[in-house]
Amino acid sequence: MIDTFAQSGGPASVESVLRDELAHGDAMIGTIAPILRHLLANDEHSVFGDEIIAAMRGMMSDVARQLLDAHTDAAEDAGDRQHDPAKIASLVEHFTTHPGFLSHVHALALEWQLTHRLQARLALDPVLSPLLQALIASSEPNVAASSMALLAAQARFVQNQRRMQLPLIELPGDLMHAGLVSLRGVAGDTEEDQAQAVAAEQKIRSTFDESRSRLGLISRLVTGMGGGATVALSVSHAGVAIFLSALAIASGQDRDMATLATNESQVARLALALRACGLRPEAIEEQFGSLHPEVTLPPNFEQLGSDHAAALLARSAAFPGS
Figure: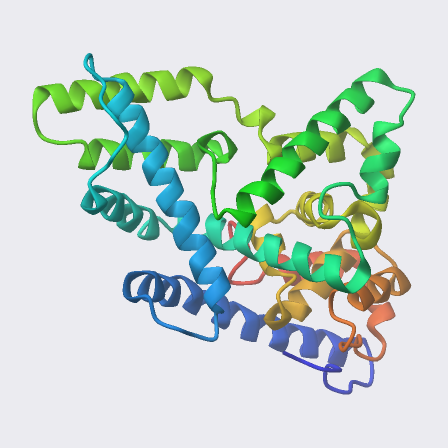
């Protein structure tokens, strides 16, 4: 982590400092997945934090149980939902080898950790942020209704995170597909087992609607704000959940990467992402005051244009499509 960034004398050196810090962050990101796989497999303590590893393991085990529940329910003589621990472990192992699945549950655990930290430090409500409260009171019925739906979804997220759970309906579409593919692999070799897996998959897919998930609701709400979405880039006003989605949308990153950018090891990525969103340096300093009060921006940061910041971010090894 950089406490004050290195001293710099002008735009070129500011860019050099940020580029070097971003490269350092990229290198760290490259080590995350293999380290997480090792820790999840071996149940060891680490600098990644016991609570993060426990939350990830809990969420993936919960997804595994839900898939096996669906498989059991698809049987003609469906019995109880007591599952072989080896099958749960096998599904979790499948999830940990899927980069997208691993990064998503890691991001959710980090989001909850940040939410909990800002609740303690800033008294920021984990469910009802000032922005969401204002949107609920909107005179536009659609906005108010969508905001109420998000309020309920965010309340469920908080409850689920406290229980280390992850409902299937909250998975992104590609990860839902990955989970169903994994279920086929552990369902069993008999025709009956595979028929149950197909039936379970069909039932799950028939009720799955990503747009109704918490992240789907947030995305629709933020994009619907148009130019007014700048207010969602204040974490103390928007709350962690809306802020992360707004940061991802405005900076062109996926949400899991935007979440990781708030980690203390990724302050250069966060600074560039906020600048790429078009925020002025004083607004970026305000966000750092909320997220990383011990970090100051490098001298002459204000001379780095938003387009230039976006270009630096896009050249990052960890940027999607780079």
